[in-house]
Image (cartoon, rainbow, N blue to C red; front, side, top):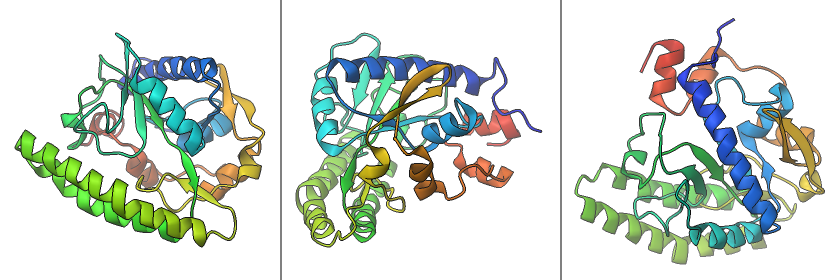
Length: 267
């Protein structure tokens, strides 16, 4: 069986750094009484591997939208020599509606097309929020924001690129997505939640009864918050989450070329 993250590999070094960042993130949330939980592949890793999925190259956490807003205020005002909270407010090149709590230094991967413009590129944690909405509204927000924002990464002139990025953000976040959000609220018959509108993740739905009260689960030797009904939460995302993916699915799940090259010998 292929070993994806042996000790000493670039991926394993990055994973260990991400655990440090996650620990710092957890401390901040505890200080400010902000409820959060491991989500997506990080939660899957905790449940199936008690740590990282061997080929996973990021950390994902989630929270309710109201907690996300409080956390953003705390992190955007943070003065730290080590950590940086990346958002549309703190980095003019950043386009995601979710945030990144990351190290300022020591990136261990080659940036993708978009992220090469980011202010900082150290390893970190992707911070998502969930809101009450429907699949249709979530898909529509992805279509609008994603299709408008995607071409801006290919604009080479920095000032023109930043102008276009900001224009798309204003048009979507203050006009189009609020309309879509209202549609999602009015038509939501099942009290389902999805990842923040515009985030690009519209297929998975969540229910508060599966999340609260939160529980704890081991991840890389440390206990972190997880949804109370982890099995149902993961099943809504992955179906049979205990089944291991094929090698082709693993290739598609890896975000950064440096890890693909290290594991499979390909760019």
